[in-house]
Amino acid sequence: AAPTREWEYLRIDSSYLKPRDGEYVLQMTEELWEAAYFDSIQLLAIDHPPEIEVFTNEKVGPAELAQFQVHVVRKRHAPQRVLDTTGQDISQIVAKRDGRYTKTWQQGINQGVTDEHYIELDLGALQHPDHVRLFLTGWMFPTCTSINVSMAENPLKPKSKPPAIWMPDEAGEWQEVIPYAGFPGGKTKTIAIDLSNKFPSDDYRLRVVTTMELCWDEVFFSDEPAGTNLAQTP
Image (cartoon, rainbow, N blue to C red):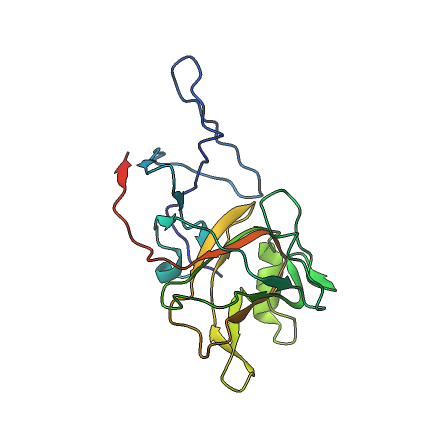
């Protein structure tokens, strides 16, 4: 029901990776229902100046969205306001990564499937709308294979819709701009969504719309070019 991907790049924050007796010790455990088979495991060190942050793309989606990429952030920007589906201001909940998660849906339909819900972000007055990347840190409770087959076979059954990006047009009407933005691959991970030159007007609001059981912990954006040359040492 879903294409396979033979690789995954997971970011390990330097605060977690400390030497023990002069060696780095990592332990791989399987936390979900799958059986994992490893052919190659490699640690990739990324050297960067202390004033910047680096993020990988811990995203599930089509190849063009989920390809490996190192995202550089020199300065974080917080949205002016973040609302949930009911209009409640949840800016403080997503202000930092602290284990306080959003719950923006009203009804659960199946494991991992809810009614349609969203978070609405007001980015304020952007100086560089041609260089905007949104960073969302969140946690996904997944469906199972039985539910996926049931959704595929029953046309009347509510479907799981991955996050899409909606923005207001010149008339203030909301329209879907990015139909498939990708989603975090399971437990708490950070995904990057490129919004460069995507805004149809100078109203820099957007909605992350989905029916997946997604809970967001932290939201911020950057308005700088994405590329930089960093030393990557396997």
